[in-house]
Amino acid sequence: MPFDAVAAMPSRERMVFAVKWGASVLQILGYAATGFGWTPWNLYFFIVGVLGWFAVGVLWKDNALMLVHIVALGGMIAGMASG
Image (cartoon, rainbow, N blue to C red; front, side, top):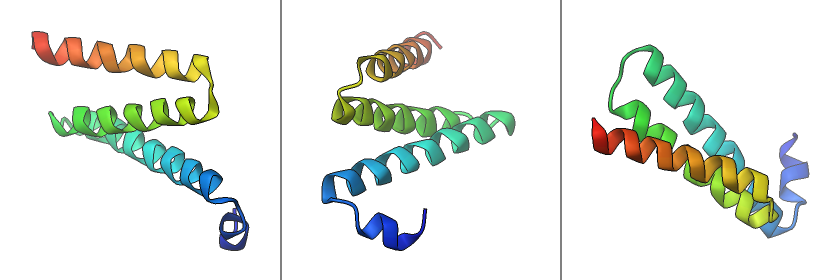
């Protein structure tokens, strides 16, 4: 998306755009960190990315998006606590 199109969005939409892309990048970094064995950095990237996508679900009032990411967060926290 060209910068002009992003700049023309209302401020709320710009915020959602930034959060969803930032969260996506962080989750991709989490996958890369997992692949390279960079523990616990992979979990930190994933947690922030999951929280970002959960926030997008809240802003969009998308229950399915919120459910998937809250379950993922719970699974990560449970795994970290048991490890």
